[in-house]
Image (cartoon, rainbow, N blue to C red):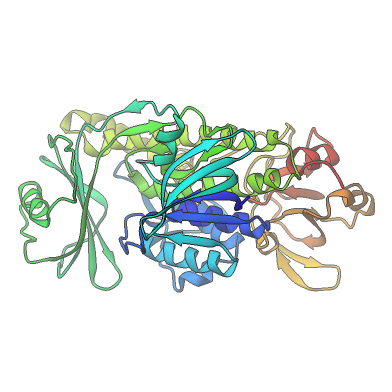
Length: 490
């Protein structure tokens, strides 16, 4: 084998997956067609759940000072994300180019073999391995052999097409422009503004750059072989808003539509998809890149365990089971937001009704959690504990020797964590057979009386930060949960 896993695509999903695999000690090659990063901002900012994920890997400090905000929206209707208790605030102005730069440096430190200028030509799943043909920067071809091939190569995924994944959904009905421009002094429209002729968004970025998004109602989608011109953006902006932005200096311009598609399965044999290769949608609420990163974190530790022979393939099947459902809800909420945001006056009564409902805290919490990635609950064997299948909250902890840590810091190595909160030697002994892949930590914490952790004596946390077992309240016993998620005891 040239590598246990080959990842195609060095965007946020591909880099995050490579990092997760390397944390587990898996040899990974990342193939990237482009010779260098584009520097384009595209995805902008992090949702609350992605902030938590980066915190769980100790990556947040690498982004420097992060501007955060609780101001959000659902389809252009303001929502106070501050109603989400115990969550990170969302990051608003981190461009995708910086995210890729940070992740590339991280995976490089972990020893990832990143091969830029290497383009996937074809591949064959041989049953026991995948043979991959690659075009090198010099134009030659080479054949690589890997245990698993993962397509993180975007909405036009070569891996998805070549493997024959079904990709049902709806085609684009409109075209929108996205542009980063210098030299403009426009009032911010962070959650967008609707005009008779369409919708615009304006957001300030670092370095004196302004992010513009324009949707001119009635504009049909176009098949483009190159990016639209800035003149097209200027003309459309003038028609919709009446403002002249022709004096601006474009940094880059792109276009996108509202196509909505999802593959019917995230894995076929030894070929797996993650991120935009598995789902495309209107980028409402900035969820696309964030969901893609979360796909990678869900997949990474599972694929590593299977590739290393520590767990059966049934563990890898849970990647589809869990993330396909998340992707399905992502497509649902972005389509709903598109209708609210981009339709004409005929939708105004619906906007008015929903705006009234958002005034109720339970509705605001529901919508904010949906867009932030905090509503997710995976199947965890049943039980009454409120955290089963949900993300583990950050909990300050004190070890027996007096050292302080937190449930978030314990996840930095990307391993499972069994947190013993009552110094239970019997519990630790039952988990001893999994100590090679699960960190068994005895500590005390002081959760708030109304916290979901109040009264909890022990909790098993998966490497992706989700609770697999908790006591009291899990229907499965501890060894059963450990074997399900981490393979047989050694």
